Image 1 (cartoon, rainbow, N blue to C red):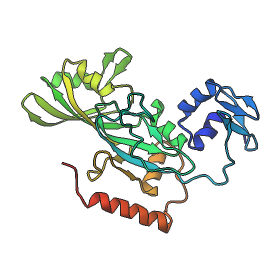
Image 2: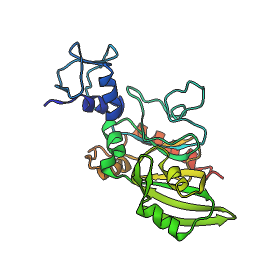
Image 3: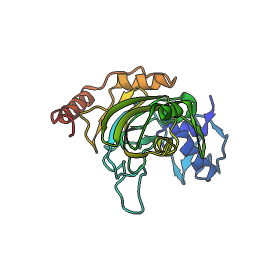
Image 4: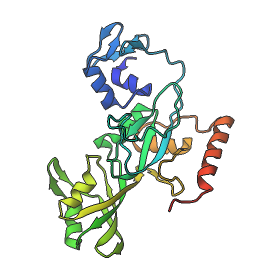
Length: 273
């Protein structure tokens, strides 16, 4: 019945597996009084502590939850910022007994869809390169774009960290030297969308993520606001990365009422202009 230590910690909502592997390597995790190492496996009866603080026994696993957040430009994707800039965690609702785990990240000048979850396994699966989860962006490009350039971008170009390409590109509106495109890719490398376009000598002047996997950003969720996925949509997202959906697919009456009030308030104002 033993499981990998980082998997157990992720299931407790402490972070993604990759993040928790860093904690273990840094000596922050102890099992039965000794410093843990990467590769350790634990039994349900083992006593685990992080930074000297014992983890409480988990009587019942918390319901898997996912938040959809519309990130504004100017917010940083960290829990705190030494320069005092606003962070994406600052507007999220409290999570009793756990903490929100960010799925991927967006750079300072990119807006749009960010997912947060309390399930480290789900976060890890959504970010892992092997799952090939689609990310869709709206991008405004300044410069001359022709069919040959679009073909190069879908066939693949060489970046400083290896070959990269868009899975698809769809042209949108054009105004003067600016033109909008919808692009899809299946990686989450740093600034990859911008670097792909810049490799062709054009400039990205606006960038917004509108979809991550099976989740699209609702038009009525304004910048700086969040909405929680319904359990059925959360299950669909989990199954898309080959995780089991949870049996419980309905909210309690209290949870349902609170969710409906929140959604009604967001929808009542319509999309942001």
